[in-house]
Length: 303
Image 1: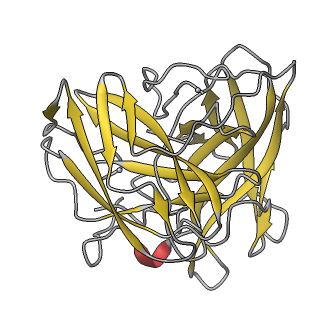
Image 2 (image 1 turned 90 degrees about the horizontal axis):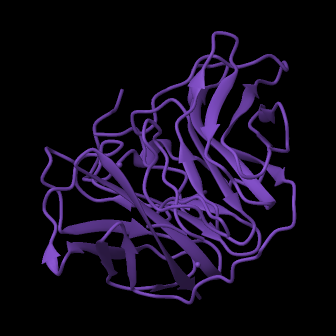
């Protein structure tokens, strides 16, 4: 659950077929560390081409559809070269997106300034990573994973490509991944309206939402008890939120209001949330200051 003009601010169609989700990122050891790793666009945290925004929101028209739990949709398929990665060490995770003809897709459209967003999360909603892979000429994507602890995970590829008619197709597809070894399950933290990351405190205006209803969320960022006003643009916004549903690991993204202009974001960040399933969601929120990516996570309830 975790504590960025862009193409669409997606996945989240949170509920994802229609809407939006929340916070992002972290690698668990039952949890790894909470800060972004040097040289990588992903956050880790303890387990315990951009286009102009429309109507003050990012890319509403090109959001991925579905809940991210299918490996194939609209004739496109997420094809990892392996479904197992070693425990306790960084490694490269490679995959392709194939079309209806089975051939690798090599043409993608920017989504939040990136051609591909890759997510990894463990079944207990710990061990989350958000990475921006690179693609080789043959359509093979490589995501540099941080060390992962044993357990069952789900890997997601979020992207925008085009169909035969040239129409943009925003998708989020996923596959199960295993990290060998004996897992140490981390209990899901209780719902809260506060979260921390690298000395920063985040306060949510609410941690309870109604199923399928659009609701506003305000996140206030502080440090040492003082309002933070030096947030830097990250993926063309001041915060990127991703949410995962307890149990089935459905994924959702949240729409931020406004646009990022200069290194003076904060202290308040406003989002529109719509979560499609009842239950608990772990929300990951990523933001950047001084060139360092921070990730916070918080549990919210949908009823």
